[in-house]
Length: 67
Image 1 (cartoon, rainbow, N blue to C red):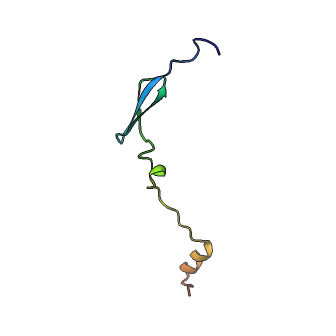
Image 2: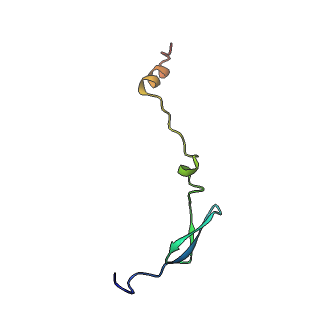
Image 3: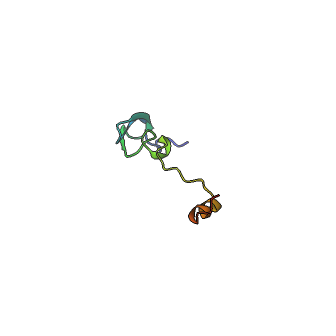
């Protein structure tokens, strides 16, 4: 590996808009985030659930063919 090519890695504090903070290594000391794993809908489960009804069930419901 070449010397003096890569930036210095320091412990960085990441701060999310929701208030969550965590630390990881980066080339800057502080970083502001918009979304983190604590507030992202995919990770929190707040993401809308897609209906799992099939096309036959939708057709039967649309034309009141359920018996």
